[in-house]
Length: 277
Image (cartoon, rainbow, N blue to C red; front, side):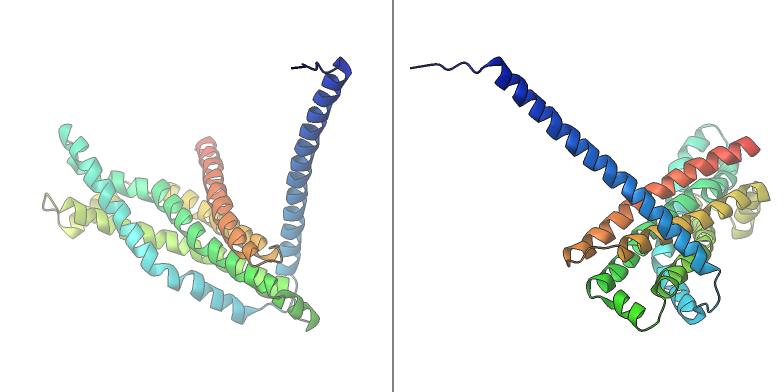
Protein backbone atom coordinates (compact mmCIF):
# COMPACT_ATOMS: atom_id res chain seq x y z
CA UNK A 1 0.00 0.00 0.00
CA UNK A 2 1.35 3.40 -0.94
CA UNK A 3 0.74 6.32 1.39
CA UNK A 4 0.68 9.76 -0.22
CA UNK A 5 1.48 12.72 2.01
CA UNK A 6 -0.03 15.98 0.69
CA UNK A 7 2.23 18.91 0.17
CA UNK A 8 2.35 21.79 2.60
CA UNK A 9 1.00 24.19 0.01
CA UNK A 10 -2.09 22.02 -0.54
CA UNK A 11 -2.79 21.95 3.21
CA UNK A 12 -2.47 25.72 3.51
CA UNK A 13 -4.58 26.16 0.42
CA UNK A 14 -7.28 23.89 1.86
CA UNK A 15 -7.31 25.74 5.19
CA UNK A 16 -7.51 29.07 3.44
CA UNK A 17 -10.45 27.76 1.40
CA UNK A 18 -12.30 26.71 4.58
CA UNK A 19 -11.56 30.08 6.21
CA UNK A 20 -12.77 31.96 3.13
CA UNK A 21 -16.03 29.95 3.05
CA UNK A 22 -16.64 30.72 6.73
CA UNK A 23 -15.91 34.40 6.13
CA UNK A 24 -18.32 34.48 3.19
CA UNK A 25 -21.04 32.80 5.27
CA UNK A 26 -20.53 35.24 8.17
CA UNK A 27 -20.55 38.19 5.78
CA UNK A 28 -23.80 36.94 4.23
CA UNK A 29 -25.42 36.67 7.68
CA UNK A 30 -24.30 40.18 8.62
CA UNK A 31 -25.50 41.63 5.32
CA UNK A 32 -28.86 39.88 5.70
CA UNK A 33 -29.23 41.21 9.26
CA UNK A 34 -28.36 44.79 8.27
CA UNK A 35 -30.68 44.59 5.28
CA UNK A 36 -33.55 43.48 7.54
CA UNK A 37 -32.88 46.39 9.90
CA UNK A 38 -32.89 48.84 6.99
CA UNK A 39 -36.13 47.37 5.63
CA UNK A 40 -37.78 47.59 9.06
CA UNK A 41 -36.75 51.25 9.37
CA UNK A 42 -38.10 52.05 5.90
CA UNK A 43 -41.32 50.20 6.69
CA UNK A 44 -41.71 52.17 9.94
CA UNK A 45 -41.07 55.48 8.15
CA UNK A 46 -43.70 54.60 5.53
CA UNK A 47 -46.15 53.70 8.31
CA UNK A 48 -45.61 57.03 10.09
CA UNK A 49 -45.93 58.96 6.84
CA UNK A 50 -49.15 57.21 5.83
CA UNK A 51 -50.60 57.57 9.33
CA UNK A 52 -50.65 61.36 9.10
CA UNK A 53 -51.75 61.78 5.49
CA UNK A 54 -55.44 62.46 4.74
CA UNK A 55 -58.09 60.02 3.48
CA UNK A 56 -57.97 57.69 6.47
CA UNK A 57 -59.65 54.29 6.28
CA UNK A 58 -61.92 54.60 9.33
CA UNK A 59 -64.24 51.78 8.28
CA UNK A 60 -61.36 49.32 8.03
CA UNK A 61 -59.90 50.69 11.29
CA UNK A 62 -63.10 49.96 13.24
CA UNK A 63 -63.30 46.55 11.60
CA UNK A 64 -59.80 45.74 12.83
CA UNK A 65 -60.68 47.04 16.31
CA UNK A 66 -63.53 44.54 16.34
CA UNK A 67 -61.25 41.74 15.12
CA UNK A 68 -58.45 42.51 17.59
CA UNK A 69 -60.48 43.57 20.60
CA UNK A 70 -63.87 41.88 20.68
CA UNK A 71 -62.77 38.55 19.22
CA UNK A 72 -59.92 38.34 21.73
CA UNK A 73 -62.21 38.72 24.75
CA UNK A 74 -62.85 34.98 25.36
CA UNK A 75 -59.14 34.14 25.40
CA UNK A 76 -58.23 37.17 27.52
CA UNK A 77 -61.11 36.41 29.91
CA UNK A 78 -59.83 32.90 30.60
CA UNK A 79 -56.22 34.09 30.85
CA UNK A 80 -56.97 36.99 33.20
CA UNK A 81 -59.13 34.91 35.54
CA UNK A 82 -56.55 32.12 35.73
CA UNK A 83 -53.76 34.63 36.44
CA UNK A 84 -55.49 35.95 39.54
CA UNK A 85 -56.68 32.53 40.68
CA UNK A 86 -53.29 30.84 40.41
CA UNK A 87 -51.39 33.77 41.94
CA UNK A 88 -53.73 33.74 44.93
CA UNK A 89 -53.57 29.98 45.45
CA UNK A 90 -49.76 29.99 45.24
CA UNK A 91 -49.23 33.05 47.47
CA UNK A 92 -51.74 32.40 50.23
CA UNK A 93 -49.83 29.59 52.06
CA UNK A 94 -46.65 31.70 52.14
CA UNK A 95 -48.44 34.72 53.57
CA UNK A 96 -50.31 32.51 56.04
CA UNK A 97 -47.00 31.32 57.51
CA UNK A 98 -46.21 34.92 58.45
CA UNK A 99 -49.74 35.79 59.52
CA UNK A 100 -50.09 38.28 56.68
CA UNK A 101 -53.12 36.95 54.82
CA UNK A 102 -54.70 40.39 54.96
CA UNK A 103 -52.01 41.61 52.55
CA UNK A 104 -53.02 39.07 49.90
CA UNK A 105 -55.55 41.25 47.99
CA UNK A 106 -53.14 44.19 47.76
CA UNK A 107 -50.21 42.01 46.72
CA UNK A 108 -52.19 40.30 43.97
CA UNK A 109 -53.65 43.57 42.71
CA UNK A 110 -50.26 45.31 42.52
CA UNK A 111 -48.62 42.28 40.86
CA UNK A 112 -51.35 42.02 38.25
CA UNK A 113 -51.59 45.69 37.40
CA UNK A 114 -47.89 46.52 37.35
CA UNK A 115 -46.39 43.46 35.66
CA UNK A 116 -48.26 40.20 35.20
CA UNK A 117 -51.37 41.59 33.53
CA UNK A 118 -49.65 43.67 30.82
CA UNK A 119 -46.87 41.17 30.04
CA UNK A 120 -48.96 37.99 29.90
CA UNK A 121 -51.73 39.74 27.97
CA UNK A 122 -49.12 41.13 25.59
CA UNK A 123 -47.67 37.67 25.01
CA UNK A 124 -51.12 36.18 24.44
CA UNK A 125 -51.92 38.94 21.95
CA UNK A 126 -48.56 38.44 20.25
CA UNK A 127 -49.46 34.81 19.68
CA UNK A 128 -52.99 35.50 18.46
CA UNK A 129 -52.85 38.87 16.75
CA UNK A 130 -49.35 38.96 15.25
CA UNK A 131 -49.79 35.49 13.78
CA UNK A 132 -53.16 36.35 12.24
CA UNK A 133 -51.77 39.56 10.74
CA UNK A 134 -48.73 37.79 9.36
CA UNK A 135 -50.80 34.97 7.87
CA UNK A 136 -53.50 37.25 6.43
CA UNK A 137 -51.15 39.74 4.80
CA UNK A 138 -48.80 36.94 3.76
CA UNK A 139 -51.59 35.15 1.93
CA UNK A 140 -52.56 38.42 0.25
CA UNK A 141 -48.94 38.86 -0.81
CA UNK A 142 -48.74 35.34 -2.21
CA UNK A 143 -51.98 35.68 -4.17
CA UNK A 144 -50.87 39.13 -5.45
CA UNK A 145 -53.82 40.94 -3.87
CA UNK A 146 -51.52 43.68 -2.56
CA UNK A 147 -50.22 44.34 -6.10
CA UNK A 148 -53.81 44.38 -7.34
CA UNK A 149 -54.67 47.06 -4.76
CA UNK A 150 -51.78 49.18 -6.00
CA UNK A 151 -52.97 48.84 -9.59
CA UNK A 152 -56.52 49.82 -8.62
CA UNK A 153 -55.30 53.09 -7.00
CA UNK A 154 -55.80 51.80 -3.46
CA UNK A 155 -53.00 52.47 -1.01
CA UNK A 156 -52.28 49.05 0.56
CA UNK A 157 -49.99 50.55 3.20
CA UNK A 158 -52.76 52.79 4.50
CA UNK A 159 -55.57 50.27 4.08
CA UNK A 160 -53.82 47.14 5.39
CA UNK A 161 -50.99 48.26 7.70
CA UNK A 162 -51.98 51.60 9.23
CA UNK A 163 -55.44 50.42 10.24
CA UNK A 164 -54.15 47.20 11.82
CA UNK A 165 -51.30 48.79 13.74
CA UNK A 166 -53.36 51.62 15.20
CA UNK A 167 -56.17 49.20 16.06
CA UNK A 168 -53.64 47.09 17.99
CA UNK A 169 -52.27 50.20 19.72
CA UNK A 170 -55.77 51.16 20.86
CA UNK A 171 -57.23 47.77 21.76
CA UNK A 172 -54.38 46.01 23.57
CA UNK A 173 -54.31 48.53 26.49
CA UNK A 174 -58.07 48.00 26.86
CA UNK A 175 -57.54 44.24 26.85
CA UNK A 176 -54.85 44.66 29.52
CA UNK A 177 -57.21 46.61 31.78
CA UNK A 178 -59.92 44.03 31.17
CA UNK A 179 -57.51 41.21 32.08
CA UNK A 180 -56.45 43.07 35.25
CA UNK A 181 -60.06 43.41 36.39
CA UNK A 182 -60.81 39.75 35.77
CA UNK A 183 -57.55 38.81 37.46
CA UNK A 184 -58.62 40.57 40.65
CA UNK A 185 -62.01 38.90 40.38
CA UNK A 186 -60.30 35.53 39.98
CA UNK A 187 -58.15 36.32 42.99
CA UNK A 188 -61.28 36.90 45.08
CA UNK A 189 -62.61 33.52 43.94
CA UNK A 190 -59.29 31.90 44.89
CA UNK A 191 -59.33 33.54 48.30
CA UNK A 192 -62.76 32.04 48.97
CA UNK A 193 -61.68 28.50 48.19
CA UNK A 194 -60.25 28.10 51.70
CA UNK A 195 -61.69 31.15 53.38
CA UNK A 196 -64.62 33.51 53.50
CA UNK A 197 -63.92 37.03 52.25
CA UNK A 198 -66.73 39.30 51.15
CA UNK A 199 -66.57 40.88 47.73
CA UNK A 200 -66.59 44.45 49.03
CA UNK A 201 -63.90 43.79 51.67
CA UNK A 202 -61.58 42.06 49.21
CA UNK A 203 -61.79 44.84 46.64
CA UNK A 204 -61.40 47.53 49.30
CA UNK A 205 -58.19 45.88 50.51
CA UNK A 206 -56.98 45.38 46.93
CA UNK A 207 -57.50 48.96 45.77
CA UNK A 208 -56.17 50.46 49.00
CA UNK A 209 -52.67 49.40 47.88
CA UNK A 210 -52.99 50.77 44.33
CA UNK A 211 -52.33 54.31 43.16
CA UNK A 212 -51.93 55.99 39.80
CA UNK A 213 -48.18 55.38 39.84
CA UNK A 214 -48.95 51.67 39.54
CA UNK A 215 -51.51 52.07 36.78
CA UNK A 216 -50.04 54.74 34.47
CA UNK A 217 -46.70 53.02 33.59
CA UNK A 218 -48.51 49.74 32.93
CA UNK A 219 -50.99 51.42 30.58
CA UNK A 220 -48.27 53.37 28.77
CA UNK A 221 -46.13 50.32 28.08
CA UNK A 222 -49.17 48.40 26.87
CA UNK A 223 -49.52 51.00 24.08
CA UNK A 224 -45.97 50.13 23.02
CA UNK A 225 -46.85 46.43 23.22
CA UNK A 226 -49.66 47.06 20.76
CA UNK A 227 -47.38 49.03 18.42
CA UNK A 228 -44.73 46.31 18.46
CA UNK A 229 -47.24 43.51 17.88
CA UNK A 230 -49.00 45.34 15.04
CA UNK A 231 -45.83 46.45 13.28
CA UNK A 232 -44.13 43.06 13.46
CA UNK A 233 -47.20 41.16 12.28
CA UNK A 234 -47.83 43.55 9.39
CA UNK A 235 -44.16 43.74 8.38
CA UNK A 236 -43.73 39.97 8.24
CA UNK A 237 -46.92 39.48 6.26
CA UNK A 238 -46.42 42.47 3.95
CA UNK A 239 -42.90 41.31 3.05
CA UNK A 240 -43.61 37.60 2.78
CA UNK A 241 -42.13 35.57 -0.06
CA UNK A 242 -43.88 34.33 -3.14
CA UNK A 243 -44.43 30.68 -2.23
CA UNK A 244 -47.27 29.32 -0.11
CA UNK A 245 -44.71 28.14 2.43
CA UNK A 246 -43.81 31.75 3.13
CA UNK A 247 -47.24 32.34 4.72
CA UNK A 248 -46.48 29.91 7.53
CA UNK A 249 -42.97 31.31 7.89
CA UNK A 250 -44.35 34.85 8.14
CA UNK A 251 -46.90 33.88 10.81
CA UNK A 252 -44.37 31.90 12.84
CA UNK A 253 -41.63 34.53 12.73
CA UNK A 254 -44.18 37.25 13.59
CA UNK A 255 -45.14 35.41 16.80
CA UNK A 256 -41.54 34.75 17.84
CA UNK A 257 -40.25 38.26 17.16
CA UNK A 258 -43.31 40.02 18.61
CA UNK A 259 -43.12 37.98 21.83
CA UNK A 260 -39.41 38.72 22.17
CA UNK A 261 -39.92 42.44 21.56
CA UNK A 262 -42.75 42.55 24.12
CA UNK A 263 -40.33 41.25 26.76
CA UNK A 264 -37.61 43.69 25.64
CA UNK A 265 -40.02 46.64 25.80
CA UNK A 266 -41.10 45.50 29.25
CA UNK A 267 -37.49 45.42 30.49
CA UNK A 268 -36.88 48.94 29.14
CA UNK A 269 -40.14 50.22 30.65
CA UNK A 270 -39.27 48.75 34.06
CA UNK A 271 -35.85 50.40 33.98
CA UNK A 272 -37.33 53.78 33.04
CA UNK A 273 -40.01 53.49 35.72
CA UNK A 274 -37.38 52.61 38.29
CA UNK A 275 -35.22 55.61 37.37
CA UNK A 276 -38.17 58.00 37.45
CA UNK A 277 -39.43 56.57 40.73
